[in-house]
Image (cartoon, rainbow, N blue to C red):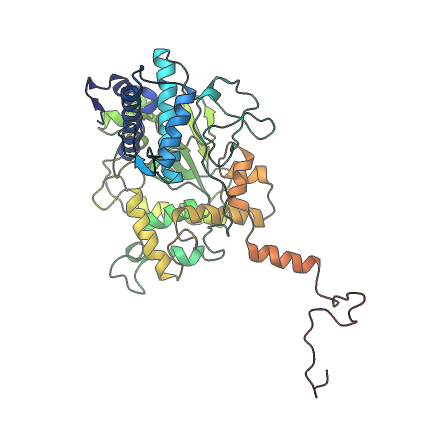
Length: 453
């Protein structure tokens, strides 16, 4: 548990913030940053109260002052000498650090308003939701402004936008190279693997299956780690193809045997508790796997989405691998499909290490820019759907994105493709002729003396 202790004792508001049900799924790393940010808020309020002799400040104007001190520091120049009237001696922080701190501070401010009735810390939290969008107010803007026509917020919680000028950096999509997925799958080699050995003893079937779910079904890195053994079956509408359903790790149900040979649904969180487990999005440490609330289908007590294979042959491959993997797994003490060699739930970090080695074996740099990461496989899937001619809305649905515009990140073009399209639209067929200068192209090289062209 992370706490903030002041001269008056434990900061009770932060303790309540820690225990709030809406905050129970965050990692210790997230809480560490929250403590640092809200600790800065507490220090700044105490220093301001001591310097002014007035009650500790709170409200929109104070938030703007706090942001300015975080960004530029608390030093001022007096008679060509630097001084710190607040006594905090803060140096200026980077743009990203200020943005993260302000995110935690405004989120905590919303909680205090909702729980204790405090005044709003961020003034834009009081504006009506419809038509609200984010927009930078200037190089030092701290708050979003209300605009119509560019998206909406789902609730009234307000966090600060990125501070600073300059447009977004553009680069090629960080997608795993097209046409190389088969090579990657064959590179998940076991230690000491030799040519000619059976597939199940030469390759890591588990990691191959996760890579297929990402590269040919577009799952986020964390989503495969919520799949149970019973969530995979042969698709009754497409014999030989796997049907994989990814369920909400907490509120969806799992069928359990009942009296008289009947089956009844049990909430997954309750089912895991009976086996001394906790949903992986509510744990901390290496076993944690996030859940980004994708679009799910509500079918009675079951909440899930179904993967969409592209190309469909990978659905056939996955079912083949699944049958081999589960057949040799033996008795299981965990409901999760992917386990490590000790029988415990497989972790994202362990998979990332295997993926890194596999990328190196096929000559793909294991970096974001080269696409050799878990997220690169999701981009690879989206790029394949785009090349197949699917619409943005269809791609967003396959990626389980709630907003069609979210798919634009995954389908933006490669600059080499853009240049090739421009050459196809306007091929070089004639020279540039500038009247009054020459009939020769202005950029054509001149012939040297004694040479003929």
